[in-house]
Image 1 (cartoon, rainbow, N blue to C red):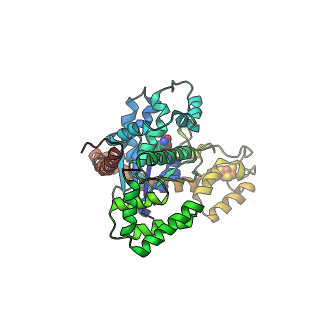
Image 2 (image 1 turned 60 degrees about the vertical axis):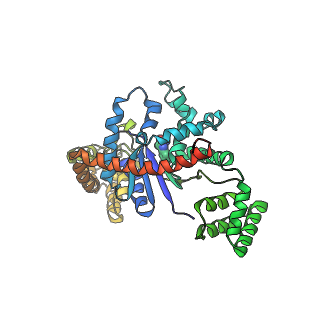
Image 3 (image 1 turned 120 degrees about the vertical axis):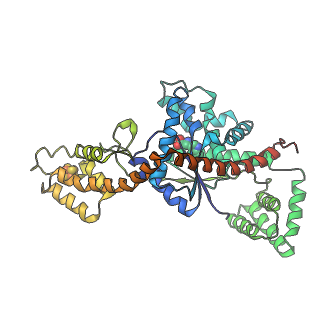
Length: 400
Ligand code: TRP
Ligand code: SF4
């Protein structure tokens, strides 16, 4: 298998909170050490639903990038960029729109869901309907192999795969594809050529996935083949044409276990968040005033951690020993709630300390962030341009 390329995007929602950190950002920080990674701010996506409040976008974008960097996303390990600064996304979106059946867009489950959820807004727009296709362009333009997303986004990745398949099917056959593929087989040599034919045959007649995998591996290993021939041979294996756009896989981001201050999921709309740049006093105050098991009216009333949102924080932050101390102390009324909250406050502050130190450095020097993004856009654009060259050529737009 070729090397993985990971790509993910986030809508600019302004400053991020611990829910984002435990859900998405820690995952990105880990991935950047394992694979090539691209992370971008999906500013056009924000406009699909918030077209009438452009003033909040710009500020949100910078706040969010500072938070990514503060959380440990490292520009030396990941390419960080802004979608609208790579206008090739829009070009690919337009070109893909030519082959996208309306019905496919209308059937994307988030389309109807979001329309209903945001009923107060007029979302009967062209941009909103085409939103999943814009997302497809975001992904396909980098030939990303892995897309880390939450569960709600899985249909969009599946949609992206279908679009890639359709595109390859329509445009992947250059004139004389079969002859060129056969000539490429000859270049493999007699023995390997025969093996290729045999594996291809096994895959095409009985859908033998193992045969497909071995044939792919064999082609990847070939040294003397041109990239064009390699792609032709890979495409020919599956019967179709050349693979121009790569079908990505989704990588489900495990749901964050981070509860909000009221025990519900942490979310801005529930007003139960601790933001990554929340100051020390405010963090302490928010946790100190968190609700606890309502049965503990007096200090001497025993309680049950299962009924207390503070316990959920202990589950995220405390070691086994502390957790035992909480359970027995709560059930026997041996400890008070303020006492119980102390280790949680300490853990949250300890987690936020390095994040806030990094954030301060970036907030103090805005040019630092701007440079990171400018470099990221440059790098992303190079990749995007390469893909567009191939796409234009396949669609008869290269005019060479
Ligand atoms: N649609 C995603 C969301 O709302 C954001 C997004 C846009 C995205 N383009 C993407 C995510 C490409 C992954 C890959 O969360
Ligand atoms: Fe919650 Fe801890 Fe109070 Fe028990 S002692 S109710 S777990 S805060």
